[in-house]
Amino acid sequence: MKKIITLCLFVFAMFLGTDSVNAQSNKIEVNAKAAEKTEALHKFIKFDDEQKEKVYLAVQEYTQATLDLEKAEVVKEGAVEKIKLLLEGKMKAILTEEQFERYQSFQEE
Image 1 (cartoon, helix red, strand yellow):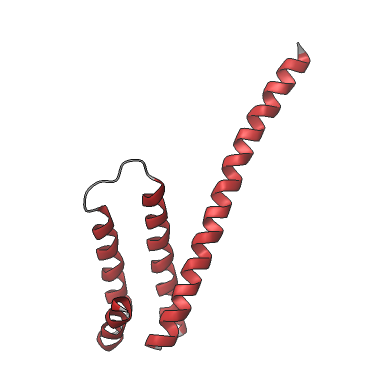
Image 2 (image 1 turned 180 degrees about the vertical axis):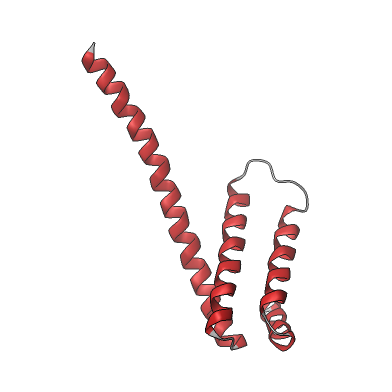
């Protein structure tokens, strides 16, 4: 009886561990994509380090949201556009007017 209980607890722990590993790999993927895009934007737009940190956080949030949408079974109509508008609003708040115009031209490429 003790062996069965121990086996059940072990299987339960394995299920919890698997979810944790998946979540960590997703976070690593999101951080890598956000860092790559932030560097590309930094080279193109030329913003300072404070803006770079804020841009990184905004891009990270956007990347996480798009990844979540890709994995979702049901996606509401207009969800992708809403996420893009949210990112654009944050970028407009972070960047100067001239930088934001360069950001928009970067997005079109």
